[in-house]
Picture: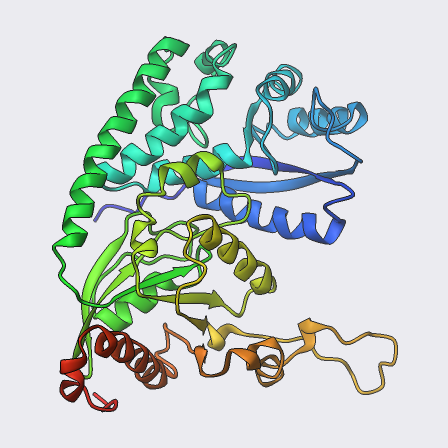
Length: 402
């Protein structure tokens, strides 16, 4: 029997800065997320470097002293990849590579790389390739000179490793070609959406890795790929679902993330048409994540960008099975009580109470509270359907348990 090949992770260090707009706590949140992104891309984070600065250094992002510290560590521990938490300018990237003599990746390139790994269909691959070329275009000067000593891996999937002879003209031509290809596919997809009839459309939206695909599998009894890594789903999956005797279309969309590269937002706007054309949004939230409120804000901002923030929505707080809260000893008089100490019941009494029955608390993986979830979705879909087809009112009575 063949032994399963072990995954070899690239040794990686992270670099981030504390600024007047980004405190230490916020930076640590971003670096936690960046570490998960790095792991998803195939890297193992062995150290983090942070520096307090008013603004990033225009030439090297971090200061000279901190750069020497990073260099010493990179050389001593044979680090091949250094990941920066913010997008670097082409000049910064070249200067840092010259000093550290390592592969330099910024947050944008890292996310693009994960998308390149995850893209399964021709459509998704075209979208990702377009975003990668748009990212590469201003970075062509000097980019190819160091590729010969780099052996693929994080940040090098996609066009980078095969198009060493590429120049700006060829890249611009390729971008133009990819845009035309996407326009053709977009027209085909718009036709497909138009052919689905007048069924009510429901879209799952949310931050990446909140359990949308798992929930999709439970509701639609389907086999959508789900994994505990970021951006497990890139392609929009649409399934016909029946709750009670009421049919509707349910789509699972790409997850959102903070600091989402503008190139990806632009490339994936057509994928997000499923969200734009939905009648109802199910905003899935991982309530077990310490920063779930920030995640909600990030999703709401992108919904605003794609003109979908005013749609009817149900907040689905998932992963209640994994929710944990901190406790304070009765004799501890020094620790201040914060949101980290809230129980689920206490959370329900906060701003969540204003959402009323549009706030649901479930565990998709354990199928906990799913009957309540189905009932609430049925009610909302039924209301939309009956408004659209008043003569069908008698066909769909109050919710009947399956």
